[in-house]
Image (cartoon, one colour):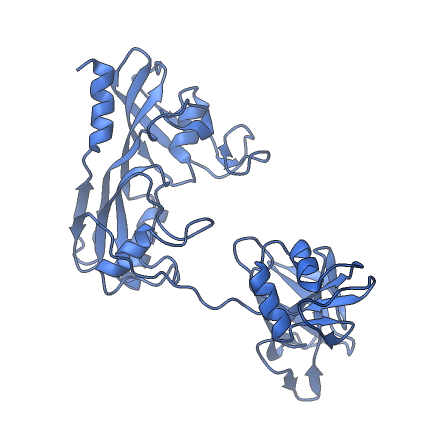
Length: 384
């Protein structure tokens, strides 16, 4: 079954392959997969021509699922493009005796809700031995169960009338003071109450470069981190700011309280950062490989069991400050993920950001005052 577009015809060519994604182990269709080109597949069609996938959309993941390939049809002799088409995936399973169809599919595809699977069954996107059946159909065992998933309806962030503290704005950017505990945009486990939901309520236009779920978002702060975050009001501003972040010309300064006595008054950490292969929610510097990262720090104040730091980062890797400081044996206070005892919150605050405004070309520096609860934490350590 072709999804999303009719078969492509180019002269004498009429290519109608059915591509199957079989139990996450391989492909089968009217030709053979003969190679991988970048992030796609080169598929040989029986008549001697080939189809190369020009853009592959992600599919069958827990976070997103798209089931169509935009492909170009290439003459294998001349290497000239002779047409294009969209190929759709179908997933094929072998039925298990005594199980309802919808229950069986949910076991095989746990990333999808049962209601969504049932809607596909109702729409005729699921067939058992080539026939459409109901969700309540009981499998006898050994049947060919084929499902042609539909792309989910486009999502977009809904406006929510919730508080938003604006520190700076011009015609191109907005600087927000994000409180700790607030998720920046929708993701796993967070569909509402995010910073983005607040932004789309308070501002009529934001950049769309990041998509409908992340309007205006150029960079992020962890949920537990408070402080200043810059948002783009239009696409041109977004691209200009992204170029500044990529070129490492944005000044990003944080305040952090860490456990223990940091030995040197100032220092830098350059260890590359990678995903922890065992605990996937963590990052690590122990592998010796990963993405380059630069963190610089200086001591602001020392306490008996803690050190108060000003931290500047030259890169923006996931959990960068947290994992770099933990690698020195000084995890951020409250950061249980990286070995610190539990506390009222993570003591990490994005204090200052400096950038060039795309609207004016002038250097802009925005500061977010240390939150009251962190000020009180410091006062308590000082015995005030």
